Image 1 (cartoon, rainbow, N blue to C red):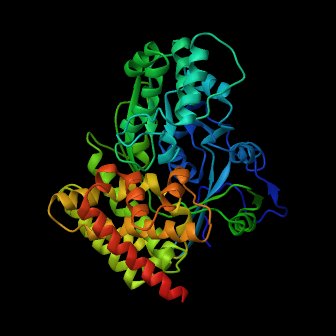
Image 2 (cartoon, rainbow, N blue to C red; image 1 turned 180 degrees about the vertical axis):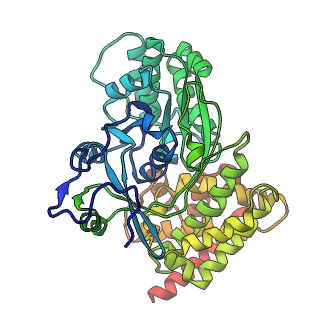
Length: 486
């Protein structure tokens, strides 16, 4: 094992101590200037890493809030926000003590969120809340039929009217609208909201969710957000598998302290941003981030080539008995399917400026790193929202060009076959649209496939050529699965 120079504790310590700023001899925490929603492993391996490595990172502390559960905040708070980043390369591990998160909060603590967002020192809010948490309809607007969105509208209308009550906002957009209302009242000026989620046009999605909700609740607040909140789009990339007990034990042995919340990641990282920061930002460029005027093609390169192949492996790979990305890639059949899909995706991206051949070669190297146990079951979650961004655009573009779109259709077919198998075995479907998916799966064969495709994209479900292509491929997966079961 190798240890990076950033590690400030010694493996030679005679006793394993709990991790905190005192035991780690860490510098005093930086002032909070960034608020983050979505305190998960990816944020801690990506935006928190870029902030720590920025030339002025010591001036930019992060206050991070969890999403659905308080567990991560509870664990990190006990460690003064500190944790270990394990960079897992093919030849060994490097350990870095991370200090950029200086506060960790339960996402349900909207009072703390409002106080911090309203603070003069806070310059930006970053988001890693996952695709489903934006609660957008198929047309990209806020889904006003969503019960959680409706509940937040009721709560926010009461609060903006000066009322009181025990109810609290529960969606990410609802909590942010409440916090931005506090900033408006405090008069602390413009702020940037930076979406770091895997969806195309994520700045537009964030604006639709947050601005759209504010417009419905209070047009005056909506107008203030339109004038004072900059929505920054990003393309983000760093594979971050789940941490296991083995990593916790490894950190204790190598670093000499007990860390309940280490994060494992790959050596590679990438961050492309586009937008304005009216209240300033860290010098992320000094840590390797790239700032561009137009980001859509970078987003699609990543969504289609990396995330698309991940989803293809998640469903097709599991149907073939594989459990990790590295296992699926080592299967020649899965590898050929990835190449097929990549060829289609590449045909619908600009030939210049994206270095796609080199990007594809780097992906193969990254996926083949067997020391990163990136589990397919983790990637398979929330497929209904992910495939809208990863498979649907490529398939529609291929069909419009008169091509078969077999690679993209295969991804959707594998998802359908995966869901059918889960439904037949009464397994839980880990998807924010699980209710709709289960209802579709109860239909007769054929009708279920069309209904599932309609959840992804109504136009695609009405395209006879698309339905036929997905049907043939899904039936092929079912036949292969049946032969394996037999």
